[in-house]
View 1 (cartoon, helix red, strand yellow):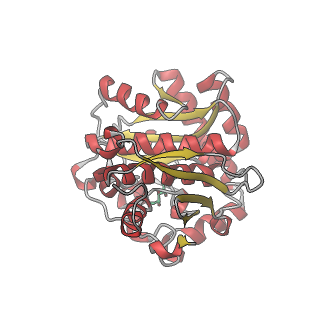
View 2: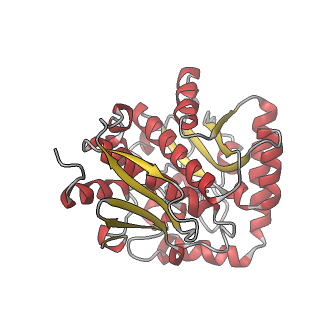
View 3: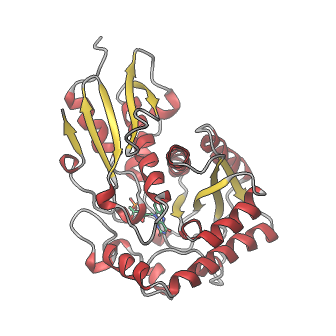
Amino acid sequence: MASIPDMTTIRRALDLAIHAPSIHNSQPWRWRWQEPVLHLYSDETRWLRETDPEQTDLMVSCGVVLHHARVALASLGWAVTVDRSPDPAQPNHLAALHFTADAPEPKLAARAAAIIERRSNRAAYTSWEVPSGIIDLLTGVGAEEGVMVVHVHGAQAHRGLVDAMAASESVRASDVRYQAETAAWTGFAAAAGVGVPTRNLQAATYELNRSPFVREHGTQLIDSGEDDASALFVIGTWHDDAPSRVRAGEAMSAVLLEATAIGLATCPLSLPVEVPGTRDSLRAGVFFGRAYPQVIVRAGWAHVSQESLPPTPRLPLDAVFEVE
Ligand SMILES: Cc1cc2nc3c(=O)[nH]c(=O)nc-3n(C[C@H](O)[C@H](O)[C@H](O)COP(=O)(O)O)c2cc1C
């Protein structure tokens, strides 16, 4: 048996992996095949500087595509070991994937179908609670990636998270540069293959979001009067550096794919983490000051009318992949 996959296999795996969710569908990653190693880089040409000045979303997005690639390769029979700090002198070089002779992890391989099925569902979900066994499963698959995944439950903790969302929204409401950037990446302004086009912004979101720049902020959904029983998870890391954020992205990918495989609707939420003040209050309220929040995931049972959503477009593989 060959010790490295052929080009057809690498391309098939990456074609699947680039369905990964990313902040505003910016796809801020670049892959390079330098036989026998597959390299992942962040691509700052698609960095949302106003939305994400600390590059948290950028790194989380790259972590998601890294985990998606691990899943896709495993589904094609390939196991990898990941060097997450391949070249400290080049901070945008995020990972080097080395192929091994090991059998791929069956749990990873089983999740490939969910990559194609998953959508960010920004509508209100139903009043059906997510059972505690599923909550445990989701926090468990995330924690396996070496981060903390906290299910925010109980009235007080829930209120704290909703308040942080509301506070971050009001900070952004007077930030014109942020608003201009959001407008440029969503709706009719979205360029070909990137951004979130109008058809992917659900009708329900328009009704519930008072915001003219459409983005799920959460507060309106949770406080909308609709009986939405979404479960909210905050993903946090022990350190607040780029490799930790990549790990948070890998964990978010694991949570999203597991939830999708179970039949749950999901959506990442990042606004309260992007605004320094509300990020601090999440750090204190959710992690008692001991971990750094990196991203939030909402999961729940979708209404029938919101069950099949159109895919958001992606850049072609050759725009984000090169062979040396
Ligand atoms: C780090 C990160 C942060 C995100 N934050 C939000 C958010 O705050 N609100 C939202 O509606 N979608 C958010 N998304 C979802 C993206 O908009 C979505 O992944 C992208 O538009 C592609 O669509 P898809 O997930 O349906 O494939 C986020 C995604 C990532 C990876």
